[in-house]
Image 1 (tube, rainbow, N blue to C red):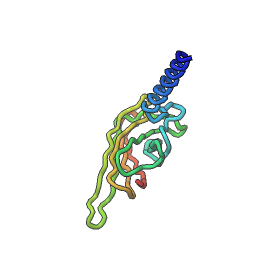
Image 2 (tube, rainbow, N blue to C red):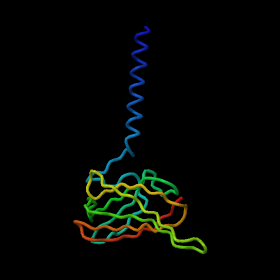
Image 3 (cartoon, helix red, strand yellow):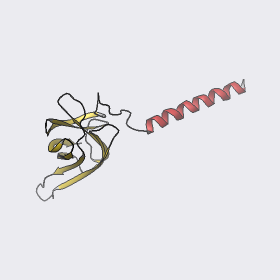
Image 4 (cartoon, rainbow, N blue to C red):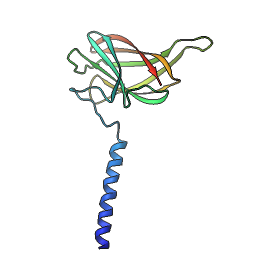
Length: 150
């Protein structure tokens, strides 16, 4: 009886460790050519050259503070397009005595061309202009998305 309880407890512990490891390995969704957007959409807009850019996060909101964001560049059919090097900057214009703020993200590529992952530290809640620029196989382009950080 003790041996059976010990084995059952060990199996439960092993399953719990596997679940924890799986949750720690990422956001749970991975980009694919059929669904290049990771997480939930924050904002989508035109990016030039017939492309669309989608800004997303795990929660579908931009928050003040540190967080992970994702960018997906797609063509008219919704397929991801490799755009080469990408920059992302959140800009809040100067207001009254408050100086202009700029919060840049550090972007890396994912296993799916045209899909990028980034880390950003948004200084405060409010209205931001997400400025996105790219240059590469799809040409050169820019997009500006108005987003609200909470």
